[in-house]
Image (cartoon, rainbow, N blue to C red; front, side, top):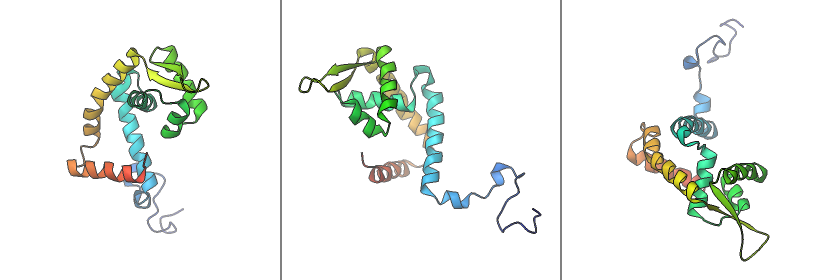
Length: 159
């Protein structure tokens, strides 16, 4: 297609990414949130690699730490994970000695998740990295903008 027959604003396929017109996508909250998530996840994998934590395992550890005895089904629902996928992760965490599954005293059919001392130590180490990591990732924003961003996300995504 010659430049004369191209739609206004359309870019040639050979143009570098930095010159592509993304204004329509930049006005799309879902797309921008996805890019932000990808940016945060990429940084997370680099920052937390030494601990062996992923965004999913960090979240799992944090929820279990803050809610000892949480059932796997509640954890899956909260973290928007499919239960079979969560069970696979929990199996790995349990076999590595990070979590323990206990039978509920009130309902013997129910399972409750707790951290082992090894798991508690790991999430403590991860938590120490979290604040400096978040500050580094949010450096383009002022502190007020950072608080506003979190307030808006929490309003949008009540947990």
